[in-house]
Length: 97
Image (cartoon, rainbow, N blue to C red; front, top):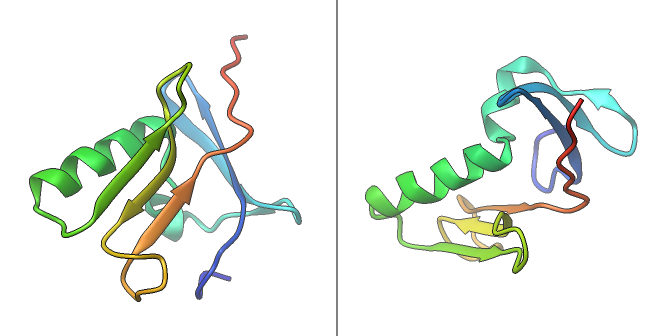
């Protein structure tokens, strides 16, 4: 399932900790060994910062103009080049219990 383009994944965060990750639209749970590949929004900020510190050749981020969270992050090169990764955040919602 993780070769090439993975597609949409739902990441649920509760109290600052990732509670679950699911591949969509099948609602198939993500195997824990791949969990680090699907960060929370806070994890995306950390990924951007660490990539900049490490001097990664390409680090691009676009942010939501109202809330400031990353909506698209490219790390390592253009999406057409092997070794790069692109994260897109959509349907983001902050809910409280």
